[in-house]
Image (tube, one colour):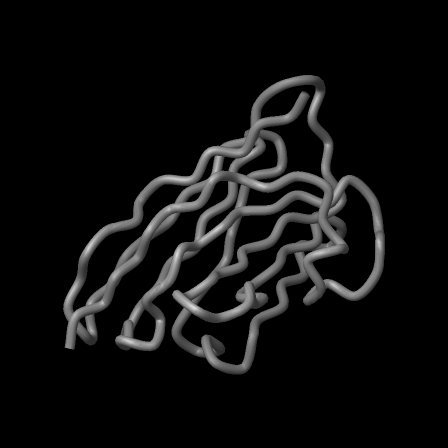
Length: 125
């Protein structure tokens, strides 16, 4: 079984920064890509960012482009999400996800096989 564990969430003021981490463990883990999603209260889960290990290609939601940066170390099975210039609308539970192979468009939840439990990010105004 594969486990994904997020950390780094917390409370920050508007304009502040946070860095989320996600560590994968379990059976031999070799993913095709990893992603970050978020879910705000009363809203559906939405795509935030993704890294495809082949070529190190990253994708971002328009709402976070230029403010968030996803990086990772495939050998260490760890990914990060550096979040700068945070806004109250970034408040959500952030989830890490892993895709073991290509399963479709990267911004769909169904493209991922494993999910973490989530970490809360709260941005105060």
